[in-house]
Structure formats: structure tokens, C-alpha cells
Length: 160
Image (cartoon, rainbow, N blue to C red; front, side, top):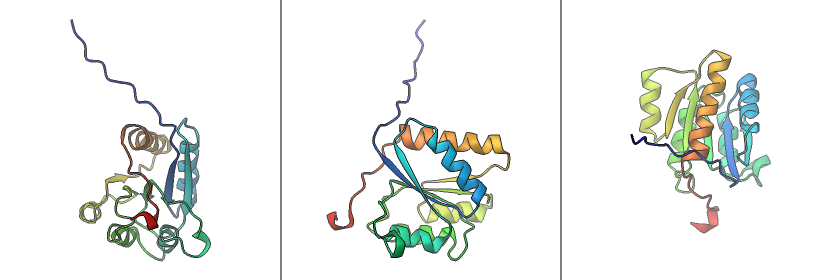
């Protein structure tokens, strides 16, 4: 009898830079912890609001030397500029549009899901309220996006 064997996911040793855009301190801390406990070489940078996210992405103010992220985890319910506005600006900019954006939010509203995909989000994940479920979501996200998916290379703005 033949059995189909699934290949094991191998964790990349390539450095991955993640921008976490999250205003909830508990969610930030937990997400950092889950990403820290991995064999994947990654750096997680965090900003607390939508304006800071755009400053980071455009290397303005305190973020002039910030590395360009390979992946963005984006909450929708942010102060100053909401996540949909951030997503719209990112995907409307040629130097940022290839960066995958995963919307990670408490919202389950059909309008938010539809609008996120209309603005070219790469995934929409509703954050579970249960701690163990939240950890599992982050672990699954980590396994898929950092192990199975080929992320676009980071291209410096001058290379376009």
C-alpha cells in the first residue's frame, strides 16, 4: 500500500523582518514571545498606531534606519490612522505593495474582511479571545508564512 508522505516544513535560516502594527500591549507581548521561541531567524519591530506604521514604512522621524519588513502583521482598530488606511497607503505605493500584509484583528465584520481583501491584504485573521487559541493562531501563521511561503525579497527604495 502506497502512502503519500507530506514533506516536513523546514524553517528558513534567512533573516525575516516583521513589522507588527498593534496597539494592544498584551497582544504585542504575546506575539513577540511566540515569534521569539522559534528557529527562524527573525526580527519583530512593533509600532502602536497607524501613523507610526507609515513613518516606519517610509523611514521618517525615528525610523530613518529601520529595515524594510518582509511581512506586516496589521491590526485594523488602531489610533491615529486605522489599519484599512495603512493598508490602502501601503498597497498604493510601488515600493511597499509587494510586502505581504496579514490583517490580524478582533474584527469579524464582513465589511472589514471584504474591504481588507479589496485593498489587497494577503490574509485576514480574526484574533481569538482565548489565550491558547491566540497562541495557536500565531504559531500557525508563523509556520505558514515563515516556513512554507516564499516571501518577496526586500528591495531597497533606490533599487526600483
